[in-house]
Image 1 (tube, protein in one colour):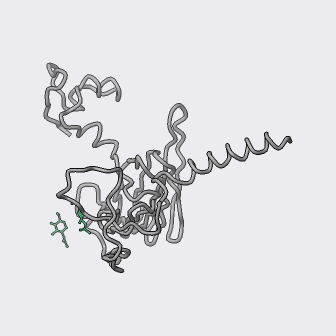
Image 2 (tube, protein in one colour):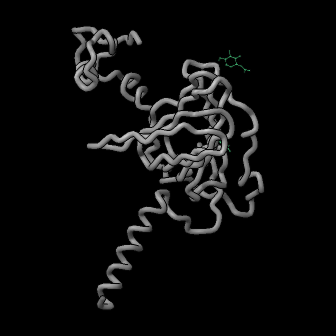
Image 3 (cartoon, rainbow, N blue to C red):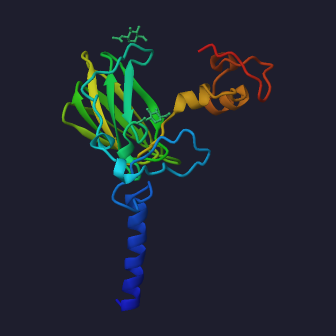
Length: 229
Ligand SMILES: *[C@@H]1O[C@H](CO)[C@@H](O)[C@H](O)[C@H]1NC(C)=O
Ligand SMILES: *[C@@H]1O[C@H](CO)[C@@H](O)[C@H](O)[C@H]1NC(C)=O
């Protein structure tokens, strides 16, 4: 291979690698502890760094993942996610972490995706049925039954879920490749939009009748409707 070609290939590889390995921007300094500047009217893509002379060990640590979450809710799940908002030292580092508790017999972390992160999930206790679905046009489901010590990865931006199929509570820890991964719960986005999505959109998209999705036959674009779900 000619040197020029080789350089070109290497440059392309380097470019592909830089896109593939980081979504949050790379840090431009060792540390950039976030300040919670609620008074500032200036919004940046991320957070400001506080004065380095004021950094403390607490900026880089968090306590509380030993505490079980309260799963007494409709889905039987509790997600405690620690992003840059709770741990200012995460600013610009491209990582965050969550503890997820599942109620016995069907606690569900419902189908959702993270617009800014891939996720690695480690089961600590219990038995989870977990998986993800690829995007159009294949929509392939990759799902597994996971026991303590098992890991699964949910690739960037893909819809995924975890269901507790055991008779005991389940606990998992998730690591995410963003200081602020974001969450979009699919059912909430569709059926809980505010204002409500016109029922015609939902009935056609999901092959439902209007009664199922809560719309009245007379509902018009932009009109709120009462959900019967
Ligand atoms: C858990 O949440 C439920 C519902 O919000 C509440 O009634 C209950 O007191 C909570 N339990 C604990 C231990 O906080
Ligand atoms: C920063 O602000 C967010 C949002 O107002 C809040 O939830 C969080 O607890 C704050 N973090 C710290 C470390 O004060």
